[in-house]
Image (cartoon, rainbow, N blue to C red):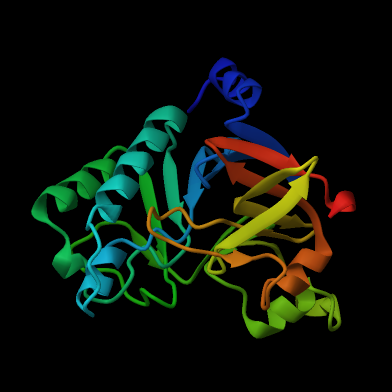
Length: 250
């Protein structure tokens, strides 16, 4: 696991920050990853492996370098944080045939990364309701650690609980999820700020997409707007830094 001195240096450099959520200290990284020191767990969402090759099959002309770049950044994070466990929160693969399009070299890289940790968990998403059989790791629809539930996206009932549109008697856990690829934009002192972001509320934490070729949804757009209205903080990823945004000035 990353040492305290190394983590302190990342915080000083604004490449990571610590946020309190569900009575836990969580590290938000400028890459869009989440590290949970108490559990020695690295959490990522929406890698969308082989998205470019998928779009190219429909006549687009895009460089198919997204999977390699995503794997290289993932490898760097594993090297920095040295987790015992990695959890991918769904849509790790852009489509059901993505693994078939993986170049052999990249398959070896991914398998090599998986072998560096004790446990790897694939959370199933809407793009990847199944994980290729030849990949190791556990495949789950939800993973619960203590009071925190890790999933790809909340069910409609849970979503209604989170944003306060109905009674919260069915809300069992704090939720960490992805799916929406949140982005934030604002202007301060004649400067424009925009990029992917973490969106946090009292009972939810929405992860940014980690994939190198993934777009996003502004937090003010539906269906993210109800979460944004309940947000207590937004952490913007911009220029290889993570920056807390003052929501009172939004």
